[in-house]
Length: 130
Image (cartoon, rainbow, N blue to C red; front, side):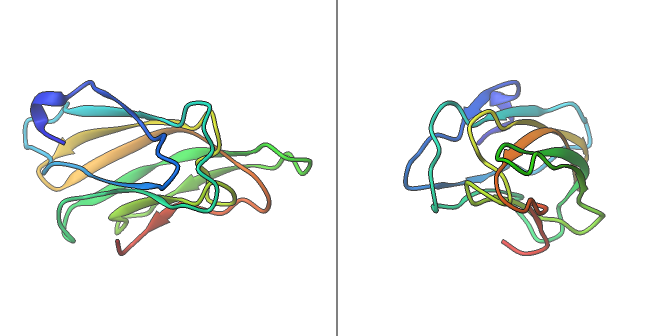
């Protein structure tokens, strides 16, 4: 990804999974990318959205909505040391309908907000390692 692609819609639709690396955030905040899982569920493959450095962090949170019979909803926050968002197509999200935005707010921070759909016992997708 490149800052000139700010505002782009990134479709997370590869059956084999994917790793998307964010560019370095800038002091001129406002660069953003929208992400969506369209109709395709990539099953057990992993999709990761990662920062470009271990010292660039993702802040904020997402609403994780359970789509199976449990129908549990949970607000997931990522604290101050998350460097990746990992979806497994079930419990950590990435089921069809997942959509979120990452916005650069400083030279070392991205903020996430959105809705993630999951199944099973939902758990947070945020990780401190890639």
